[in-house]
Length: 176
Image (cartoon, rainbow, N blue to C red; front, side, top):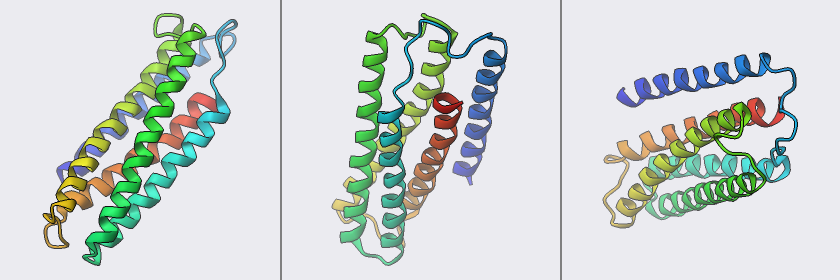
């Protein structure tokens, strides 16, 4: 129940950030501002597919837990963790490139909103990834089963919540 309340609060938090983005954009004559680098749509689209695939892996991990299939549970948790790590690494690479091209938190409102929204999401993915890796360790140590799987079920739910936020952010930040 606490996780659901937390996800509700996080939903409101992200809704506020996205609302702030739209309010700031409406006040600007041109968005993105002139002389600011454009966001890398191709690599981010591919990275979106990676993150969505991690959600499928987490769904399958949840199914493996329900069947008490530890081997598949470990396999799908591993796949989800690898894909989540790839997503964060690609985002980090993207940010390094954007900083190199002059887009920083202090360069403009454009930079501030980009790094605030996308960075906050990345922190949530990183937190979920830490939880996922900890569960993977427990699963490898044979300390997770269908009867003792509440933490895994919670992680699956939260992971899919964080992944579900990404398409909304992707459209709001990269496409609109």
